[in-house]
Image 1 (tube, rainbow, N blue to C red):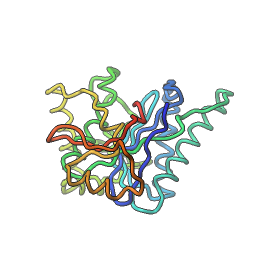
Image 2: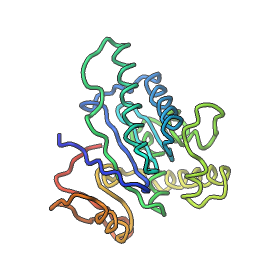
Image 3: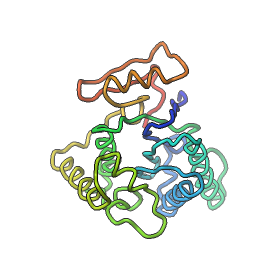
Image 4: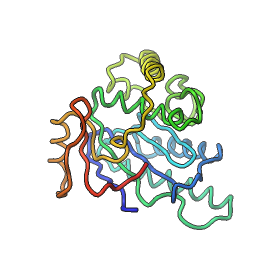
Length: 241
């Protein structure tokens, strides 16, 4: 499989997707998903990672972050991936790769597209047919926002509330629950590859700006999609979620 795109530009919101090696279900045990969340928490403490949302499934993880320009994303992903793999391989007396070699990064415009990305992440396990509602899957940012645990809190609630235009944590909690419930009623569960395969999602002006910020050119880079949902992508397709 070709290597995944991994552009990370300072100041942008990024939807990161990291899959287990050869799509194996190496995160099928709750203890390994808990370990992933624990090391995410440690990444926030150690490197100042600005976490906006996440979900860890049985064979991959989604992470929504804002890049603060200090190299915290790369260091955090190295920490999380390395420690989870080490713990699993040691426990199982296993050798070999645990993750695909690269995670994929998609820039998300911080407007209505960010709200849609939040819901897309929250509905991951519903889309997979594992649960009927995001609240039924423990290892996810949705439940953290709804309950705000005292310990091991990963999500930067003030940051995501401000980006989405909510006044406080309570407004964020209620608004996110309303968006998710509305999506469930409308049956908006389809998977869209733009969230996990493209370079960026947003309005045309935003995508043009992202293209200008990239230091490398690519002959297959193009803007696609419909008027209310555009995305910047490259050929060949580099990541399959």
